[in-house]
Length: 171
Image (cartoon, rainbow, N blue to C red; front, side, top):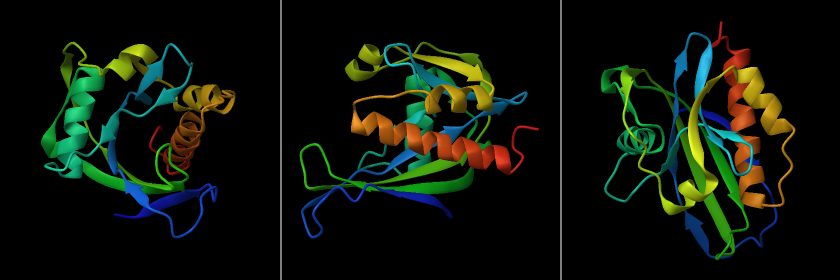
């Protein structure tokens, strides 16, 4: 899978203990709009997806996370690789946090089931929205947050959306 870009905050001491947490995310495009998770609490957009569990591969994790966060069911045969973003920064509880975020382009079934959100996702008040990519980029670029983790995620998602737009995925 191709490296889309790297986010290295350089806010950590080299050689420290690392925590590695890969994730998988979906790119679902329908009529020029993209399926995004919107945080009603903090006012930002993110692509659906999340952490890869030890017993999962990236595609299985992405399909599970999309179902939990959005209620959408990914059509397995439609999944294709897009790329990944490599992120390195000081962790919350460890000296160095490393995350590869794997992105997959896919289609979903028409029906939508109820969300199955975690406590944190409930606190964020996550909802599914199909939005114009330029609107998601605008909202995220105008979002200022005191949380380094959210700021990094917003930077990552803006970068991916801008690449998709530049490569003609929304025409």
